[in-house]
Every structure is written in structure tokens, then in C-alpha cells.
Length: 150
Image (cartoon, rainbow, N blue to C red; front, top):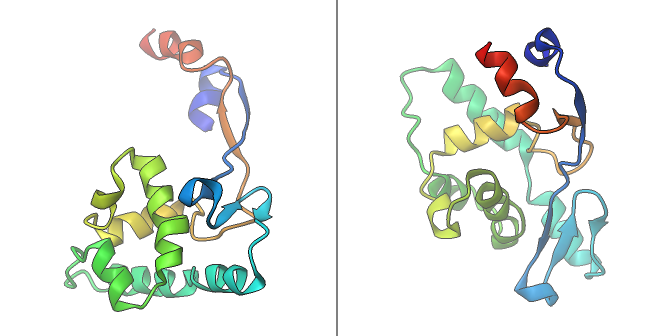
């Protein structure tokens, strides 16, 4: 934000909400702005408890404090070896990664767990609700590109 302030570029609030609808609206649905759909309470509990952010943060801390540990574990292996639910994968992790990195769902699980989880931690994506307010450049990139090139 300091970069844009130094250029005199205006920022505005950005809506960074996220939602997922499985099985063309006939399955599980949720949104970061509006919460969970009218699914049975069991599914809400199962989904919300599947996040396990503390475990992800602990994993990152171990890797960051031990540079000799291999950081190439795939996201798929991380998820399977720790027993994350299929619901968590299908209703949060894979769609979130798909939307951020514009990649096919089947490739997400081959990404580095360390890289994905670090990104998620740094951008507050390991929490479903109560995320920080994001900003975007007012009037899009053309409002500052010429200032950068000058």
C-alpha cells in the first residue's frame, strides 16, 4: 500500500469473498460472506472442523525452523497423510487454489504443500471467516502504470 501511496494512486475496498457450490447447486454450498447453506448440521460441523489451521501452522513452523527438512511434499500427500476430509478438499481447498492460480483441479494436489500453505497463511486464507479487508487500485491498473513508467 505504501507503494501506491507514494505514487498518489487511489485505492478502494475490494470484495474478496469466496463461495463454493458442489454438484451444480444440489450438493454442499457455502460462502465466506453468508456462511453455510441449508445443509444438515452434521455437514457444517464436519466442514468447519476439517480446516485444522493450527495443524497447518505447526507444519509450516517445523519446516521454517528446520532448513534441512525437505519442503517438496505435495499438497495431496499432506492432505492424505493427515486425514483431511474429502469435503474439505472439494468444498474449500481445491476450489480456492483453482481460483487463485487458475489451474485445473486435478493439478492442485501436485503443488508443494509448503508453498500453498505458506501463501494461505500469509494471506489469511487458513481462516474461513473474519479475514482482513482487502483493497484494490481504483480505476484499475491504467491509473498507475504511467506513473510507474515515468
